Amino acid sequence: ARSGKTTPATARPGGWHNTASPVGHGEAALERLVGESSSMRVVKERILRVARSMALVLVRGESGTGKELVARALHANSHRACAGLIAVNCSAIPESLLEAEFFGAKKGAYTGSNQDRDGFFQAASGGTLLLDEIGDLPLAMQSKLLRAIQERSVRPIGSPQEEPVDVRIISATHKDLAAEVQAGRFRQDLYYRLNVIEIVIPPLRERREDLAALCAVLLRRIGRESGIPVPTLPASVI
Image (cartoon, rainbow, N blue to C red; front, top):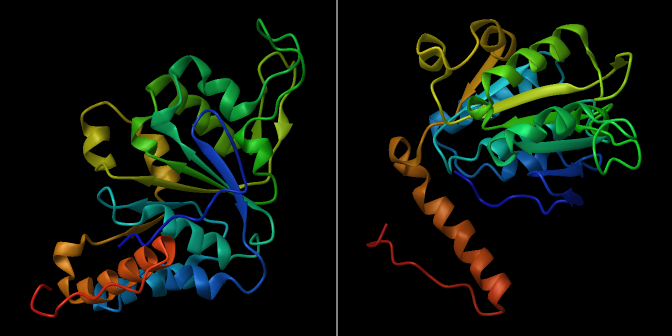
C-alpha cells in the first residue's frame, strides 16, 4: 500500500519530478512499502532480486497500491541510486508536447524555443526513468519510445542526429496491457520490450493482514504533520 511519495527535488510543468537516492537509502525505500503479508514479502524480495539488473521492469497494480514506491525502491537498491530518478506521468502531458518532453528540443525548433532543452531521457542520464501510466501513451508516441529503447538513443526535435542515452527504464500502469494489446490500443512489440520483468502489487483487499500496519503508519504521519499526539485506532475498527 502507498505510504507517501518522496518530495521531489526538482519539478517542472508536464508531470515529472527528479529525486536522487543517497547511499544507504535502499532499505528505507523498501520500508515505505508497508506490509509483511506473504504477497508483500514476494514483492520486496523480487525488488531486491532485480534492482541491480538493467532489465526493463513493468510495475502493475491498481491505483493507490504504491507503484511509484516500488519503482523508487528499485532505483534506491540499484547501482544507479546516486543518480536521479525522473518520474513522469505519461497521462499528464498533452499529446502535442510528448516528443519534446521525452526527447528534448533544439533552439529554434519551434516557436518560443529560445534555447536547447533536455527531455526526460537526457535528464535521467545515468539514472532511472519511471514512465508512470504508460498505458495512456498514444500509439504514435509508443513507436517513438520503442525506437529510443531499442537504439538507446534519442533525436531531439530540430536535431539532425541522434544522441546516445544511458537510462534504466521502469514502467508502471494500472491497466492490463496484454488486454490493451488485444484491443489495438497498445503496441505488442513495445509491450514485450517493457515487460521483461513484471512486478504485480496486490490491492489491500487481498492482504487485509497489512491493514493494521498501514493504519499505524498513516496515523503517525497525521500526528507529525498536524503537530498533535498520534491518534489511536481501536482494534475493533480494524
